[in-house]
Image (cartoon, rainbow, N blue to C red; front, side, top):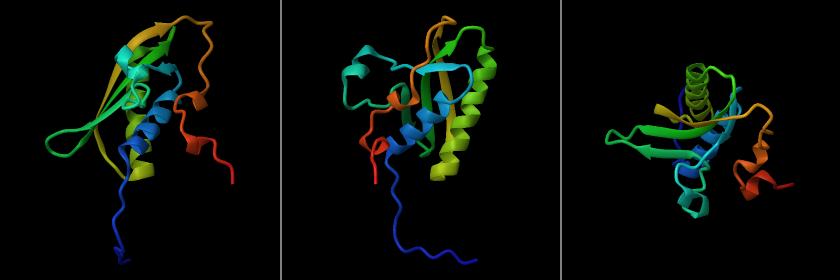
Length: 131
């Protein structure tokens, strides 16, 4: 099979943040994502809700994810599951390889705390569009 190139494909870093955040939030044991600084909550520049992407000197994508976990989970096992889920989701949806997924566990949430709705994770207009 011969692949024909008819133009460039450019994927916004914001799209990769959304894919990363949703993949991490769907892992069992994750309660919510958390911004690493209080100022990020107020800043429009950091809309990633706990997801921070950067490129290293080699051009590889590195993801830092800040999470709250549910009480009673195995922290290392959930963290490894987050790493695998993020790498798989980003590659499957955008064909971008994430070289590192650094999981920062910010805290543990008590058992009876309700989990936030996934739709509140990213308040993007395209999530609510109707045809």
